[in-house]
Image 1 (cartoon, rainbow, N blue to C red):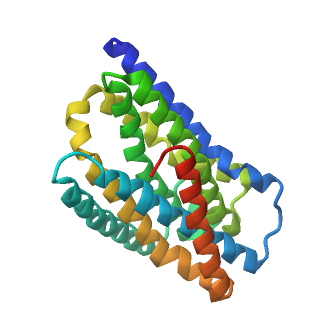
Image 2 (image 1 turned 45 degrees about the vertical axis):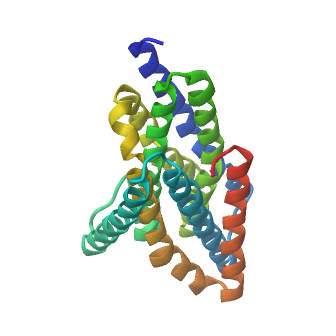
Length: 256
């Protein structure tokens, strides 16, 4: 396909995968009041899903990339992502007046950190979409990649809702934040498709970076808060359930 058609196709595919993230929050239209224990369970499950997405889908896929440098790029990305998130978290706590579209006022600093981590996570997925459509066999690479990411985004949207809903964020707002967190997918797909020769070697680093940011969030925020609201045994089982759920969903659509 021509360059213009390629860029439009990659952008539309990115928009579709972006919107699919919002579907994950839909179940909360049927779940209203949440007890403190249920809040802890949901936070632990979200932590498990994010852990699986980080280590299986992101790190795992990054290490599969061609070239002996992949392991170093992924490792460097992990460290850089964790440092970035630590600095961002410290800055947010030091600047209590900073907010983004009222999310901090409604859900607290933790809610803002969740959306930040998931937004960072979605960028390499957008790049992957662009790279897929820019290959010589777009029909057999680009379309399956976009479809897999679209399906994969649904539980990611659920993970965001699981983390935000207990903090008092409305279901419609959870849908909006889930979609916004995946906005880098259509944004990243276009330049990646246009400059695939430059973007593809950087994918392992980007995947590691996103994984490092999410794992820092899990360890520093989600699990400690979950442990304050539910028994440690319950938190551990919920965390494991989140990991297993994301692995099974990823395997079902060919991710990880």
